[in-house]
Length: 151
Picture 1 (cartoon, rainbow, N blue to C red):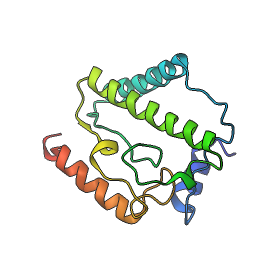
Picture 2: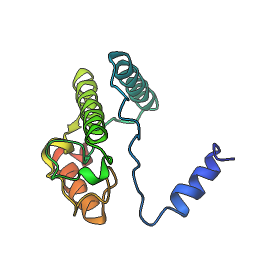
Picture 3: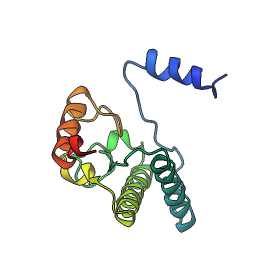
Picture 4: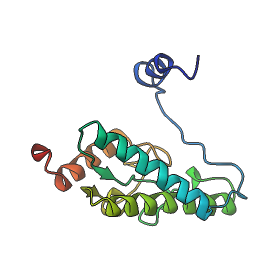
């Protein structure tokens, strides 16, 4: 049942958690590999191809994350040990870099929220979930980057 679309709709949209919490990988031995990043890029490219095949325009944005360098220290969301914190910061950076690369390779309209929007506790409720203020700030940044009327 948990794999059904209906369950997902009810669980995540109609009855969402009041305070979502990102749980970082517990095992600091997780390593980013070239193969893993390539698989991520391929999956991302497949998503872009599917969206374009549907006739929709693709807009790409990086995500504000506590593990990125421009974020005020929010290590408490990244793990309990220095190794976990480092690993989760590396994962955040690898994902962000891959999104940037795929957007550039496809010459897509792009908003680099991870670089352009200062990250802090008032905008992030945990490592990856925006607060109400975070949603407002990111929406304003998107409006600055994208000419929505032209799509």
